[in-house]
Structure formats: structure tokens, C-alpha cells
Image (cartoon, rainbow, N blue to C red; front, side, top):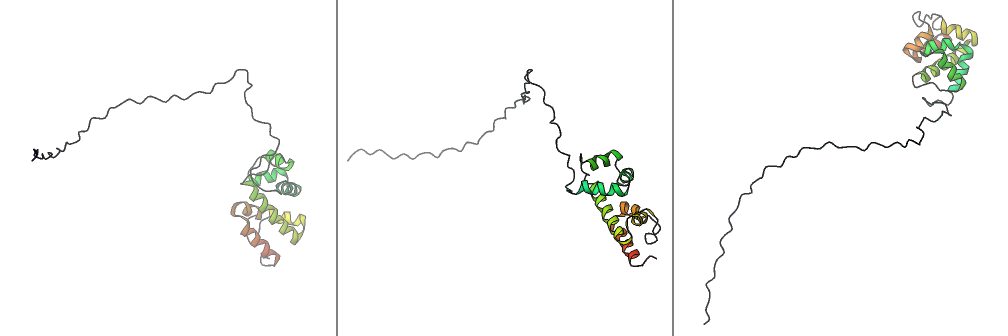
Length: 167
């Protein structure tokens, strides 16, 4: 028989607890951003000249609306009612600018109410109606109510007068 070596059993491996090493703290270095280099031979950039009117509200009829209302009321009156300077209404009428998002709805409402009143009474009387105290509006002027409370009460007053309800 051959010499047999006794089988040796492997000893079980010892479990070694993992030890945590303290984290190495490093100071953060500030990030350096590259500053743009300006070529001294190059001209500085300037804004392009404005060739198109500044558009603040998308109202394609704003020029015609302002011209129409300026033919009925003075530009100073329009400016005072809408809350802009008189020169602003002149820029609108010339097409240099359009009414902004706050002024455009006021102009649309004013034109709508004036046009409806004009259908009932004619041009001059409609203008007088807008600027005079109204019984249906508790003595307030339709123009003032239009600018403070909106178009609905003024249209109700207009309908009431048209059908004889406030007479």
C-alpha cells in the first residue's frame, strides 16, 4: 500500500471585522472660472437698432383702435383714462409701439362700449353718454365704471337705456 498522507482539514477562516479608517479631510479649493478675454482690437457690442416696433401685446388691430379712439377722444384723455403718459398714446398712434398687456384690454373695452353706444345714439351722443352720470350706474359715469369695474356693468347700463329700463 502506498503511504497515505492523512487528510488535513482546513481550518475555518477567522472573520476579521472591517475597520474604518478615518476619512481624510481635504480642504476644498475655490473653483476658478475663466474670465473671458476681450480682444482690444474688437469693437464693443452694442444693441442692434430697433427696426420693428416693440410688441407687448398681440393685438393686430391696436394701431387702428388707437387711431379710432383718438378721433373721438383726445390723446390726453385716453392717456389719463388708461393710466399712461400722453406721449405713449402718440407712440401707439404712430405705430412705434403697441399697447401693453394692461392697456390693450382697456382700449378694446372702451372701443367696444363706444361702438355699441354709437349704434344706439350716434357719435356725439354716445360720447356724451360715456362722460355723463348714469342713473343705472348709481350716478357714476360709464367711463369711470368701465375703467374700474370692467365692461359688464356698462354694457348692462347701455342695454337698459337702449330698452328704456333706466329712463
